[in-house]
Length: 501
View (cartoon, rainbow, N blue to C red):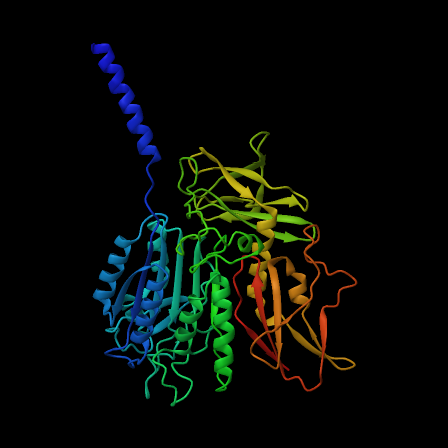
C-alpha cells in the first residue's frame, strides 16, 4: 500500500511539473510613459508640450499600451515617475517613452529638463546636468528591465532655453545630439535634426493644439500595416514638407537598432497575407520577436579583459589590443588550438612598469576568415592572465571601421569642381561605401530625394573604386548647394549635411 501510494504521489508530481511547463509564460505587455512639460519656472514656458503628451497618450492607448501620462514634472516628480515606469515594465515587454518639453545637449549628451531646472549661465553646465534627466539613462533603465523593444520619441528640439539678453548662455545646444550608438532593440525618433528647431505651429493662424511633429507622428503611428521605420520615414517627409512651406528647416531623424520589423498596428498584408485574409488576424499588439540585449562579461579571473579595435587597409587588417592592466608581454593565437605568438615590443618605456612596452597590435591578412582571437598577457607579478576570447567578424568590423571614418570626415563627403561645367564629386562616399546602405542627395534642397549610384561593396578591396564607376554628378551651373544624407548598414541615418559652392 505504501509503495502504491508513493508511486501515485510521484505520478502526480510529474503531472504537476508537466502542467507547470505547459502553462503560459509571463505575457508580454505594452507599457508607455508620456511626459509633457510646459510650466517652466526659470526658463521660457512652453505652450503645447502637455497637449502633445496627452495626444500621444490617447494614441498609444488605441494601440494597446498601458499609458502613464505625467505633466509638468519637477526633478523629484520626474524621478518618481521614472521609478513607476521601471516597476511597470518587465522582461520581454515593449516600452514606449515620449517626451515633450525643453531638451538640452551638453558635450554630446542629451538632458531632459524638468520644470524647476535653474536658469544657468556660462560655466554652470554642471547645474543643468545635476538638475536634469539624462536621456541615455532612460535607455539603460529599460535595458536593465530586459524589455524586448524600447521606443523613445523626443519632441524636444527647441531653442536654447538658457539664452537671455545680456548674459552668456550655457555652452550647449537647444537641439539634441544624435543618438547613434544605441543598443540592440532600441528605436529613437527626434522631432528635428541636429541644430534644428522644432515648430510648435506653422503660423499665428495655426490653431492645431499640437506641435507640427506630434500631430504628424501620432497620425502616422495609427496607420494599419505600417512598420515603425516606415512611420518615421513618412513623418520625416511630411514634417519637412510642412516646414518648407514657411521657409523653415525641420527634418525629423530616427535611429534604428532593431533587428526586425516592428508593427504597432497590425502586420503588413503581402501576397501571402492577402490569400489568408479569411483567417483571424493576429492581435494588434503582437510584435516581431527581438532578442534581449545581453551584457557580455569578460571570461577569466581579471575584470580588465582586453578589448580590440579593427581597421582595414590595403594590405589587410590591423588589430590593436587595449589592456587596462600594466603588462610585461602580450601573446595571441587564432582559434582554440595552436601555439601562442608573442607580439614583441615597441621602442617605448611604459611609465607604469619602467620596461619596454609590449606591442599592442597585430596584423591579419585581408582574407582572414571570421574567428576567435585568443589573447593573454603577463601582469606585473609575472603571472599570465587569460586567454581571453575576442571575436573577429570581418564583415561587421569593416562596416564599423568605415562608419567611423565617414563620421570623422563628414565635411569631405562632397566637393565641387568646375570642369566643362559644374561637377559634384562623392569620392569619399564611394571609397567607404561598405558602411552605406543608401546615399541620397538634394540639389538646392534641404530634403535629399535623389539616390546616388554606387558600385557594390567588395570586401576583398573595399576602398578601391572600380575603373568604370563615375564618382561624380554633372549639375547645372546655377546649382547653389547639395544636401546629403546616408543610411548606414544598421539602418540608422546620418545628419543631413549641406555643401555650398
